[in-house]
Length: 275
Image (spheres, helix red, strand yellow):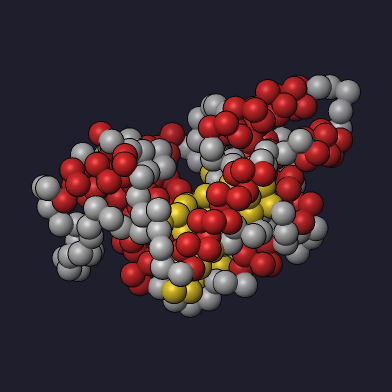
């Protein structure tokens, strides 16, 4: 499932991601899109769920934090009739293998996020220190999470849960709200990502799925790909599948040095060493 609220570069990116999912999951999969602009995604192989203004405002919470909407949309999908497992996918992604590989890691008390990033970068450290100087966040029962400024971060480009764990979404939303209330956003926009990692990391066996989905969040990758997306989708001479094929050949990928750094980081994490 995907979420798109408002306008912006994510619209072009999301179209590419949806088509990559369709390429690697032909038939038998329910691909959903929650959006306040259904017309922007006409013709895509996706089931559209319209999000009205009141719902969008409620999902973003009192802080108006748009990424909080991911938590609420995921919870709504998990509560839908017939759903056993669901994954919410950011727009700046593309599938490289079948979604079956992603969902193989999802079962009761087993969840998936895109990637274990390790120790937080300086903005997240500052944000966590700001929060912890004021309070120790608690769960819905009032029990402290025992957070520190060196929480292990997990990338939330993909988040997948089993329906029996849907109540964890309420815990994630509650923790996100506490982080925002205590000034987290003054230093970082990643409150929901931190909250997902803390809740799922403590309450479930949390795994990765970066082998099945690429998340090109890095500025240098997104900025190079953005004009290609705009050109391909705006070209009236191209069918949708032709535009996708053109983009696929030039999809954002790490160069040799970037891949080497990624591999080194993964090896370090396996032996307990983090950056």
